[in-house]
Image (cartoon, helix red, strand yellow):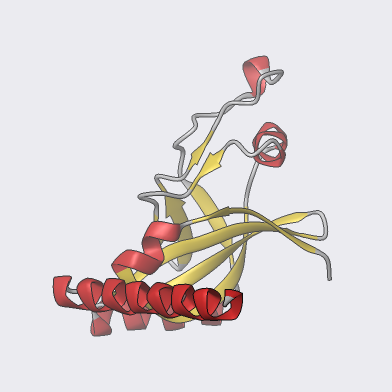
Length: 152
């Protein structure tokens, strides 16, 4: 299968522990797909809710297509995710009982279809974020030292 990443939600990896991830299709109109192909999408601050056995992505911004005129939709409209009923019910149970959140991690093309990687996430506390930053900084220092040593 041919996949091409369109957009990633980098903030999600900083704000949440990603416990599990799922692949979901997304219900879009033609002008939205054309806008996505041009890179006019933003996943920041978006989330997924489950209502009446269906999953919806909220607050995802898809810029209006330049040549779309009357066919353009609201950039922040609620879009339905296409997942198996069993997966949706499993996620619904975990969100209700375990205090988890559903966050879109990335948006990509799989062949010609737009897919969303949905993450079952748990929020990080401030000390967890600091630990991650300290590990990342230590890794950078090690890389610099190794690079300096290889030059000598």
